[in-house]
Image (tube, rainbow, N blue to C red; front, side):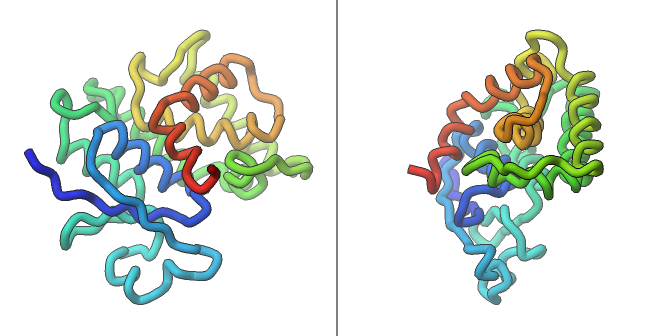
Length: 211
């Protein structure tokens, strides 16, 4: 089946964890796409041409023909339904309860831990660490993340559910906000995040804008 290529709108610095999630999903499913970037600091996402394509005026936005969709988890769920396994690589577990858990992890990482996301922005993941210590609220968010990840990841476990899913990429990114900054993280979680970071699709994102 010939597939009309997608266009993925991402931030020009390639630091959006959500654009990264969709980028990885497209590569994992081996779907044709091109990347267009927007300078978010210059407000390009608010320009009328993009607002006509993106309901939320945010990245990532995925466009195919006259169809467009924003919000990363909505996009990856759409891609999973449009290009299902086994013909295409799975983004979510087949088991219904595990799939629900994966979506739970994604939703939680996007809606909680705000102080950690602010104090350990993705700049520390993709560019350079900060020398600013976590505030009390930031540390509380870090502790919450580590406690939850500790429950999800058993010793020597390389993925959440025995096989990679897109929630693994999202969780590894969140853990790397601490790991890449040198903040204390249990060894098993460091190993898990480092393993996820070696996936070819993730490595391709890491090279974007940083060659």
